[in-house]
Length: 197
Image (cartoon, rainbow, N blue to C red):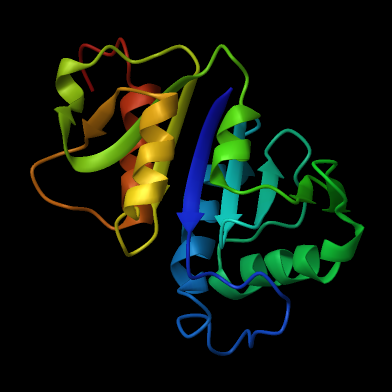
């Protein structure tokens, strides 16, 4: 199982946002692209991936590739899945998730609790351009990557992540958009063991 934890500190935590202005809704356009980059392949869905979209450190929308339905490659329909999840936020009691559509659930958890909920077997790494070059790191069998949206993690979030991992990895010498970083991380894992293309 691969897991991606995407932090959207300024993302909406209520469903009252316009699908016609996703950048104005806490950069929900980028967060939606991160979801699709983590789960979609050509003509299919990665069934070995779980993506956690942490919204405002209040809610986490989970996408489970093994049961996910209705995910399309456009930002608007992905944002609509997120909005549908938030419409049922009152049903999310404690840390018990509510399934809002097949393979999508909403849980009342922030970043720290979401990281606590990961399987103990996952190797958690933070993706950041100042980390150890990924070429120097052995690909883990069960990887969990933490990254932020268009802004860096705030100091509080960075401390929470550091408490769950000492490993920060860089995907290259130039900063990448978050959704592109996810695609590169997938490629790193997908090609582990390849000696020729």
